Amino acid sequence: MGRRHFSNLSLRIKYAAVSGAVVLLLSVGLTWVFISQTNRWLVQNLQEKGLSKVEELAAGAVPALVNVDGQSIDQLIEETFRDAEVTYVAFLDSRGEILASRLRRQRLGEVPGIVLEKAHKAVDPTLISVANPAGQTTYFFVTPVIDAEGAGQNKLGAVMLGFSSYFIQRGI
Image 1 (tube, one colour):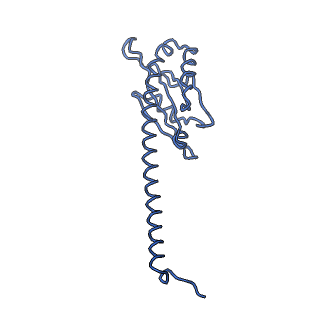
Image 2 (cartoon, rainbow, N blue to C red):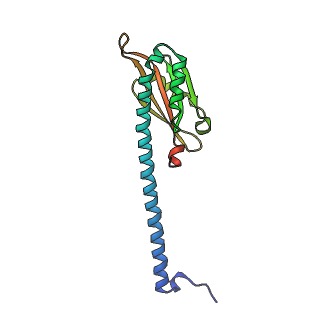
């Protein structure tokens, strides 16, 4: 009994094999498109949420930064961390030094120095994304804190929030 080659199979078996392969390829392709679109949508929503939260936090931080009130800053950090998606919160002074911060290490790791440098230089709300070796991206939202009531528009510092793609990868 010899080996049967594809050319020796009946037309029905050939049709079934080709049809099965086409259905499999279409399923894989459509699944990939769906996952890609869902991921883009989740990233876009995360960016909108992050920008909104960091601007809201910056508005509430003006009195705390004007008075360099550590207790108020700690309270703002605590309130912000109630959102389980937030992985990092930091308040920077006008020199770019961290006044206070909090980090969920299990999800983020260390905050790269380049992020802090860019945060200090930010003059507008800014998004900084950093990928780690595990393939997760952390999105840092930075906005300067401006004292509009003081003499001129004085930059008091900056507020920075981090959100990890950990949540996007798990569909949270």
